[in-house]
Length: 276
Ligand SMILES: Nc1ncnc2c1ncn2[C@@H]1O[C@H](COP(=O)(O)OP(=O)(O)OP(=O)(O)O)[C@@H](O)[C@H]1O
Image 1 (cartoon, rainbow, N blue to C red):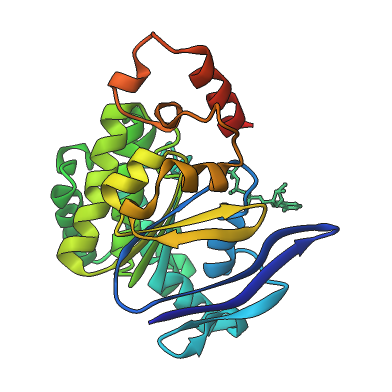
Image 2: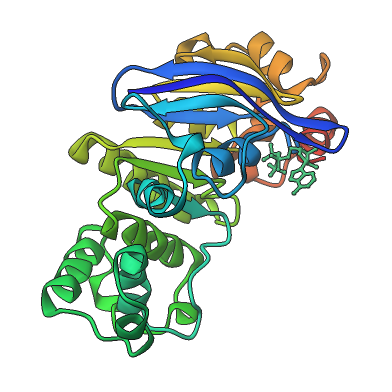
């Protein structure tokens, strides 16, 4: 289904993604983990064609999406929707219009400028919001919603495109643990119920373990781990994060208990390492 072959991105002297190679045989929920600067965002941005790759091929159902141009590239960006840490909604626009903007690639500029949407599209947008538990927020301005609600609006906007793949770049990094859980539950359901592939960059090991079928670990641009969550031992996590024996897993946790005030010196040290 997806075959990533030697995908590389070089910025000046820095190789942000170095020869990434893996394949996805069937729709899955995949987490990419690694410390800040490991190349996770750059990889997703290349996949979505927000950034051009320096080298390599990325085949989706047999076609190299890294070589697409013009309308074909835009069609791929529709099939491969992206959500971001900062939601990227239009803050002063109402929620349902934000969701309808998922159709931008498929609509004329005039209709979009005047916010003219067919009733069928509006109804679909509301159905998607309803599925995500936020239909009652539809008339509100996006900026009036909580972070977790805004991220669900962003997911709704992605679903409006009816994508085969959803790329999520740190989707919960700006959220408190409760909202993080709601958003991850939503992404998991979208995979389970619709059979869409979800590839999410995640900062925290426990989230990757809990929600993903497969975890890819990146370090310094290279893939250093690729396996099921049960293979993600503390030693494997150390290899990914480059932490020494002071590495403590709980410092990478989003769970409410782990955020209780008692943080040991080791945990604080590991937390610093992981956020640098
Ligand atoms: N537009 C750019 N120009 C130059 N260097 C860049 C650019 N984007 C990313 N980089 C560099 O590429 C490397 C990988 O960055 P990237 O953002 O992909 O890492 P990441 O794992 O997603 O980290 P984070 O979690 O902090 O976003 C870093 O060294 C970064 O400084």
